[in-house]
Amino acid sequence: MRRMPLSADTAQKLAAHLKVPLEHLMHMPQHILLQKLAEMAQADAAAGAEEAKAETDGDK
Image (cartoon, rainbow, N blue to C red; front, side, top):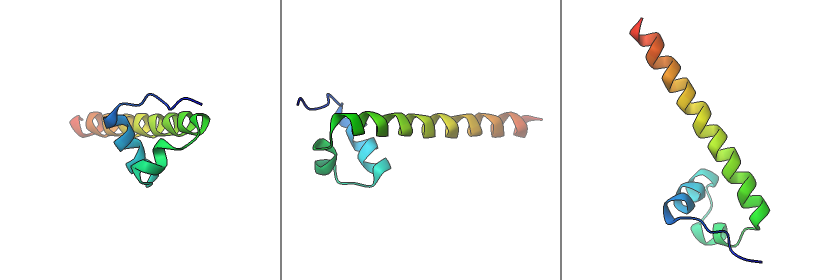
């Protein structure tokens, strides 16, 4: 099985999000990494949407 082609920045962000060492992240199976990346993206999108809503509510 090939390693997942992650950028260094993405790998560091994902390791911090999962609270695991970077070395453990690099040995995770590919299907789990993809699932965790999707979860991280959803969490980031939700946080961005909340920030945008708070900014628009604050402008009123």
